[in-house]
Image (cartoon, rainbow, N blue to C red):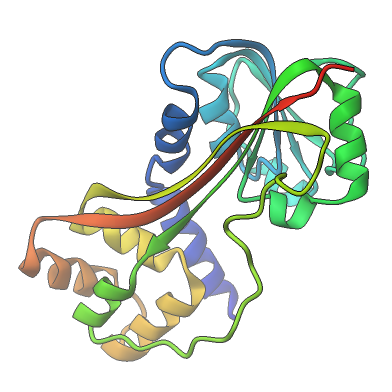
Length: 238
């Protein structure tokens, strides 16, 4: 893909992100749970770490990609660190809650389990969560058909198959979020394959205003359908 396309996709990605991290953590933790030290593994540019920061006095955001960390959003209670699940740059017994926001599929390993036991205090909370934005209805409305290739990605990956943590809850559901036509267009164009499909359909360099107009004809505000998954565990006392 050309640099021009990459820049366009990065623009739309940064222009609007639905508050899914906040929505999911509000279901997992409610309004009452609070922690001293949190750890978000695979924090990317910081959206998931910022969601966790609402529940913690301080948060470590760990990310293996240096380029992602360069774009991480500054926050007064978040410390961003370059690292990965199998070698966490975190002191022993230093965190009370750990989150994996769509990162456990890539991070899960025996080394990760060992590292979690090392950095977590006794009875720490461990949360794995993910979400799948369901765009088929919108793409069908816009007469866009994509060539789908099979994927082995697992949205439901969790720690049910290990004895190191006690399960509290595993849950999945579909939620609907109200978004404007412009917000929905940004979500669609943050995907490179979808963006290219709309460029081809409208035969213009910037199809964004065309798509916003199309979506606005149906309704000024649409429901974004999202399937969410989360599992919550407690670190067993040593």
